[in-house]
Length: 120
Image (tube, rainbow, N blue to C red; front, side):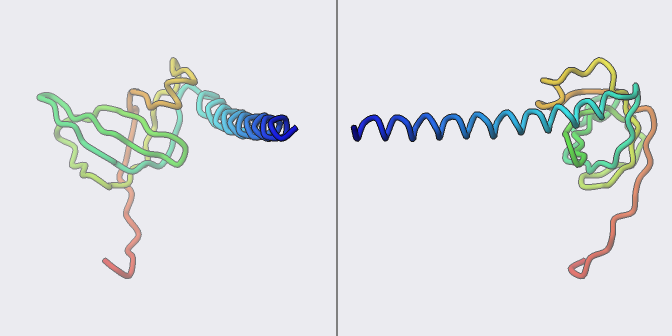
């Protein structure tokens, strides 16, 4: 009798965890559908990292919903933690790549001014 109660609690716990995972995936899929709705997508991003190459730089960027990579010419004065308004190509990106992080082409960008805080 005691073993049946423990097993039923485990089954309920597994079901609740599976249900939470399913809801999370559905919410992310909704964000993905909004992202690929148009061929280009405009968003505000923060520069997380800059990987320097010979001819260009690869930027790791973070928006409110996802992280991605893009390349920029060497002559742009972009630094880590800069804020950018960026227009990117959103076609040919599948859902799994959207979740993991993807590489895409930048069409246009401009730098945004950071808001000054008390500590700065």
